[in-house]
Structures are given as C-alpha cells and as structure tokens.
Amino acid sequence: MNELRTLPVPDGLDGMRVDAGLAKLLGISRSAVASLAESGDVRLDGGPTSKSDRLLSGSWLEVELPSAEQPRTEVSAVPVEGMTIVHEDDDIVVVNKPVGVAVHPSPGWEGPTVLGGLAAAGVRVATAGPSERQGVVHRLDAGTTGVMVVAKSEFAYSALKRAFKERTVDKHYHALVQGHPDPSKGTIDAPIDRHPRHDYKFAVVTGGRESVTHYEMVEAFRAASLVDVKLETGRTHQIRVHFSAIKHPCVGDLTYGADPVLARRLGLARQWLHAYSLGFEHPADGRRVTFDSDYPPDLQHAVDLLREQDH
Image (cartoon, rainbow, N blue to C red; front, side, top):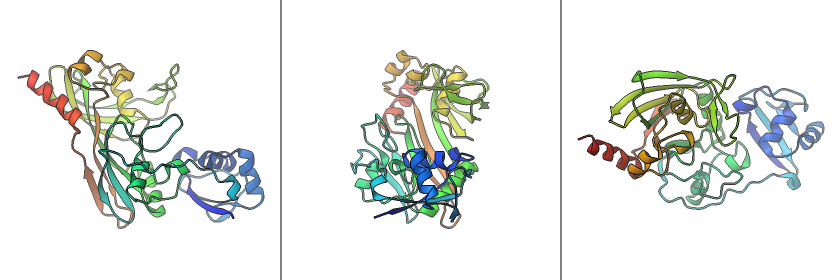
C-alpha cells in the first residue's frame, strides 16, 4: 500500500534539483526519486514535475511512496525529565527545553529528544519534514536551554518556516560571556560556516553564510557580562561562534575557547546560554504571541555566585 507524503520545501533546498532535494528530505537515493518522478508519483505545487526541475522555498512537494521504500527514523516516545509544555493549542506546542536534550533524533545521538518527550506526552506534531524531525521549525543545541516552538498542524509548519525565513520571529537569548564586550551594545555581522579543520565546530569564514547577532549589556560582573542577544539570522552555534570571534566566548563553552577555570569556579558543565523569549505571529489568527523561560538552576547559580563575589 502506498503512502502519500506532503512536504513543504525548506529554505535550505531553495534552487536545488527535485531529485537531489527530495532525496535529502526523505533519506532515499536520487535514483529512487528520479524513478518516482518518471512514474508521475512526484508533484510540485500540485502539478507534475521532472527530476531536473528546480525547487522553490515555500512550495509544496507531494510524493507517493511504495510501502517498501518508506524511510523511517523512529522517534522513541520517551519522557524527558525537566521538559515542560508552556503552551499548546491545535496548531503549535511551545516547550521549555532542558539541558542535555536534543530537539530530534540524529546519527550518533542516543540521548533524550524534544520530539520523543512530546510523543510520550501524547502530543501529535505535524507530519511535514523528514521523518526524524517532523514539525520542527527551529532548533536549540543540546547544551542550550530555553523556549522553543514545534508545529502541530501542516499549516502552522509552513507559516512558521516562512516567518523564520522572513525574520519576523523575535528570538532573544541571554548569554553570560567572558569579559566585557566593547561597545556594550552592538552588532556582530560576520559570515559563518563549517570550521575548516574541525567538522564538529563552526567558525567565522570568508564566504560563509550571512550571520547577524545583536547584543546589549544587561549586567556586568568583574569576570563576565550578562548580555541580551537578538538573532537576526539563525545559524548553527551562531551566538557561540560570534562571541568567541570577538574574544568573549560564552562562559563554560570550552568548545569555543572559554576559560575552564572560570567554568569550574561557577559550577558550569556547559555553555551559559539560554533562549529566554520567543515571539511570533500565531499561525491561526495572526495575533502576536510571546513566550518566556526562566533560567534553569545551574545558570541561575552561576549568576548568583558572580553577584556574591562582586560584593
């Protein structure tokens, strides 16, 4: 029995050939996609398409998959300790993600995931997107805590992906960075791409993807500064890379050059970085909604210690 999958084209596949893009989305070979297209089982925005046609971000792909070729990366329904649902309705679910939790399953990750926690809580998410990250419209690093949204309806998935692309989503983080950035309020505009020598890291690289970070000092301590960060773009590790590039890495972020002595002194086992506010237009009615998240205990403890040591 065949399965009909309807998939919005994400930003990263804009301009890519149908066979290459759909192969990425479904995790099957390009030749398999080409065969499906030739047999009329692939449609773009409701019309027939060939394997060599170009994808357009925001368009919709429909593909009819034979059951034998259905790619599946199972999302295990496992409760996630410390993850709370901040808001839920028919279209979206907003969660407060704890540390040590990935957003979705990925090769090599055996820990808990947001999608697994939602499945365990009986929350059904949108089917749009690759099977292992259906409903996911943005992500936080496993070592970063805070508020994030997952789409429950296909309409919400498309609307939120478009909002992130058009930069109408307000994403605010608080970061504790070493030293004192000068100026205390500014913008870091520097392109980011894979690190030239270390695949697991990212770096400011000439010719990389546009990356813009706005920041403003919230509170200054002798050894560090608490800054409010607003992302204009959303690159992987963007905040961590940008503050490392200006010689003020996030406290505890040993991957990007933070001082391990300061991290131990503050009892931190990860980077001090928290997504504390997320605002966007609700897909259902367009009203502006904002969701906030308090600091988790380890981050609050570090700030309290700095305040105590400065007095």
